[in-house]
Image 1 (cartoon, one colour):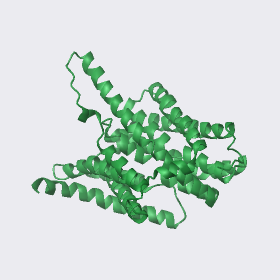
Image 2: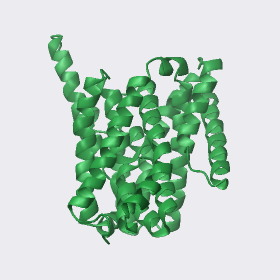
Image 3: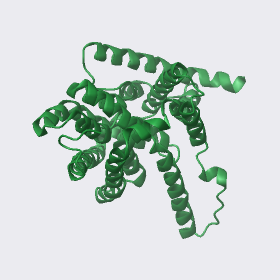
Image 4: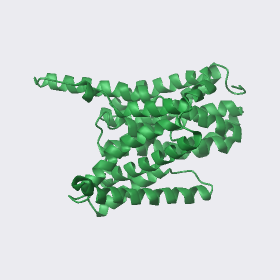
Length: 346
């Protein structure tokens, strides 16, 4: 109980920022705009607060708890929104496009990050955010690779900037290329990053495109599972390599390798797919998950120095722009190659 009380001040600050971010997001949506999601708003509010008030012995424990433990709990609850049947509905064509876009992100993305001189954690988070599902993927992979709050801030900022542009540009390009609703929905669902941005982009084209883009996006989110496991293994391998070079003994237990919170994510997804979690309950759990994720990102913002972010932020932003542009090109190229674009119906 005493330890729990220590968490209250910092956690309360993060929750207040999360409420403010959700309110600002609702104002944005009521005005017909979809440029900035609550997660990004919360992170930037947190960074602004950090500029005037640094976490101290009173607030630091709760802020750390929210950015680490609450974040993992939010990922577990997110599983309730993912139904395996959605994958079957979307079909093999969309999965084909996703294979190519994910290969682009994690293959070329790693090379681009290395060429720009970024550390592998920052580069990996940008690649994951671009290839899988924006903030949710970044949030899921960050604890597995032991990323710093600065790494997370770079990842979110890089993916957010490109999403903002795509909400406006994608529908224009879609009409220019004469894409069908299905072709555009698949393109938006595989190439735009954050869920709210995918929804906004899809429905800006047509209702049918928006519906399909949302299904594709949910399917894309399932890539979190293999990505988290792969990055856990990579992180352990790099640790062993570094310690071996130093001549120190290495002991790595299964507990340290395996991201146990992903089992909760899988369990929630399985329960939803089997119909054991009612649709209304699943929707409520998704809402709670999104809010807790916003609070966690607010906490990350509270631990991030905005001046430091700006001083070395050009390269991560460039990395995000290049890899996002490549994904956009690869996604539409594959659609044309397999006959979905321009007039295909799935």
